[in-house]
Length: 108
Image 1 (cartoon, rainbow, N blue to C red):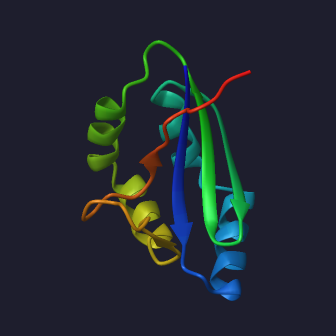
Image 2: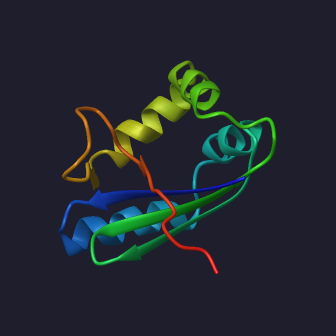
């Protein structure tokens, strides 16, 4: 299954550059948590301060299970706290909501 999500970064070139440096080599525990959840491929693209994530998952993946596992993983919580310094919610996000699932409106 493919999922596409969006999130904004704080609109500051220095912070955006730092965020990108972190993503050149993510922590091994973060990569493990991603793979262990059933995500088989993940890519993040950026235009200005808007991020677009594409996730390919296998049949074991669920957003609820990933959220529960992440909440119990101290290293993921540390990573998420660190990343939140660079990220900002989309204007339509609910309080505490980060990456927002996008709706496909066209396919060729």
